[in-house]
Image (cartoon, rainbow over all chains, first blue to last red; front, side, top):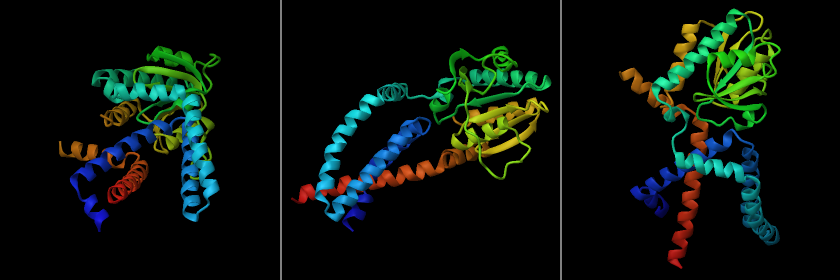
Length: 253
Length: 44
């Protein structure tokens, strides 16, 4: 009863809401990075610690307590770049959708749609992931880092057959092409059409693992498709693609 | 105009829904644990 009375206190509610927000942001930041495995490790250690304490296994609890101190130091050293980036992002506060103005977002979408339209006409395969809230660092690291201003010409150049970076996908963050020739996770969804190629499966796979919006151009048919939250919408026109992208990227605001 | 507001609210609630639920549970457990520890300290 005392706990319940404490919970109904407005200060407690604010404290819990702040904690919730901080934990949620940390999870969002970790979701796209290798650090998610580290988080799993920490959770296992913490759960083990509590179980050992409850069961009265004093030696194991003592060992885990000592290991924790060492482990935390190890984490700071190993994940120093990630921690630095996290703090910088925390300082910046605004992420991609808020950093860019409405016009800039629309301009970036126009460049993507123009490039995709041109490639579709010439039946050039393309795979473009547009980052939203969840980080795609683990995907970006598998490719060649570009950090180049987005333009339809550059996108077409990347996917031009025989170009060194045409294999794999491109990651777009805001108005930047962050990385090219990236490896996307392949979807193992059994409900996907058997006729779908690896490019489309990769698009669906990435959209299942993150909140990214993934645009695909089929090499065989030149059809434009869009993968969002594991769902593939096929045979889109340029206008449809523009409208959906605009809606999807704006709603983050 | 109403539709736009509803859409934004829907996004706010259901975007990364399970991540939000898990975060909330962890936040609640953490608060209860720390609050319990503080209360115990005060009683002692």
